[in-house]
Amino acid sequence: MTAIPVAPPENRWATPKRVSLVPLVALIFFSVSGGAYGIEPLFSTSGPGMGILLILVAPLIYSVPHALVCAELGTAIPVEGGYYHWVKRGLGRFWAFQQGVLQWVCSFVDMALYPVMFTSYLSSLISAVAPGKHVLFELLGVQVDLNWVICVGVIVLFTLLNLMGAGWVGDSSVAFAIICLTPMLILTAIGGWHLITDGTNPVSSMTAEQGQSTWNAFGSGLFIVMWNYSGWDSVSTVAGEMENPKKHLPKALFWSVLLIIVGYLLPSLAALAVGADGDNGWRKWEDGSFSDIAGELAGPWLQYTVTIGGLFASVAMFSALLASYSRLPSSLSHDGYLPKWVSKESKRYKMPIASIIGSSVIYALFCFSSFANLVIFDVFLTNIGILLEVAALIALRVREPELERPYKIPGGWWSIGLITVCLTAVSAWAAIEQYNEEGTKAVVYCLIVVGASLLLYPLLAARKAAREKADAERAVAIAAAGTKAYGLSEWRPDSAHSDRAATGTGTDSVEA
Image 1 (cartoon, rainbow, N blue to C red):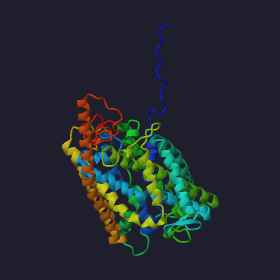
Image 2 (spheres, helix red, strand yellow; image 1 turned 90 degrees about the vertical axis):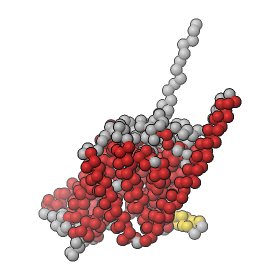
Image 3 (cartoon, rainbow, N blue to C red; image 1 turned 120 degrees about the horizontal axis):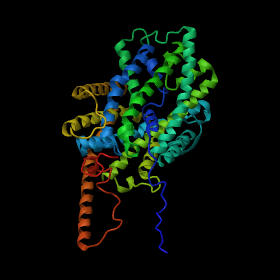
Image 4 (cartoon, helix red, strand yellow; image 1 turned 60 degrees about the horizontal axis):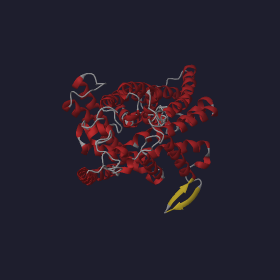
């Protein structure tokens, strides 16, 4: 009897779980916002009238222009590594290297904020976890306390989730969004009822204090609110793990913009029912004030509910952004600038293990309070990244007019010109405000980071060229000897993440 060949069983883990449309919206939501948590200082700085106005205006001059850039470039070049490859294809390898390195370094201090934010909310429920409350031991002059251990625990948990892939991170983000938004919906309903029954005008004052100019209120508030509306490009780095990014990315960006605006606007209006003065009046609002506001409006039960929502918002933002930032060293490794092992993927989930774990270790170290002041260079590095993306958009419109663009910014060069003016102006204003607040220290930190990246490129580029030359010579020698090579190198210069792919010479230059 002739044996009937049987196909081997399908490996259910051979293909990573993909990010569908709704999880993609959730990922963008947490990469940019996470809810109204953190918007409170806007009102004590600029006043209720200007605060509400900025929540509505800032998206028009900052969020929507950047989201449009991301929609066009993200659908034209939907590859793993996202904006790193946008800049490489538009401006070349040098500027792409700067984009990848600077944004990854920027993440060191950015990402450390979220576990610290988690412990901050937790300490309002359990005072024992407050920083310095329980010191476990001291190492090299650094105190290791219970607060830091909890931060590390959060990082470990969501690192494990990220090792399963962006699909699982996206699905968990949907659940986290429901948990985070529900307390704010309750606060909105109760605060809105107070506004109606008490006859309170939430925007009775345009500015924060008498004598403050409208321009000062607008400028100071814009600096605050723009960071609550930044991060639209973050999700692009996991484009290779999305379901049909050419179709879903523009839709997800559109719905995310609306969700985030509403998520800021309604709770803020409702919270203004507490008035200007008193212990929880808007004149005294700071980060985390929504919990106390909720307590005044409805009692301890809502205060605890909002606090728990803040706990989940902080870890969800960390999880979503870890998925984004961890793809940068992996992409740099695929292009040969970092060692091969940095981009080595797990067999089960096809995720860059070393890139994800290595990034998380760095974030854990930056959770020590001694690194908190380093966040001041964040503004400058983020601005550089945004402007490089705009430059790449313009360069590709000029050099590659025939490039397939499933979503193309309407309005032609007039729209691109307006987008460029808006993003350049807002970025410049933010840099000026950062300089006014922090002085030359912020500029010095930025120059150190940028200078190091500029010096690093020729060294790593030379190393990359030498390795490519050695690989080529080895391949020629093997071919000449008539020997088939096995297991020489896992790094492939024309992989979907590589220079050839992102510049259009590889097989996966456009398709993820």
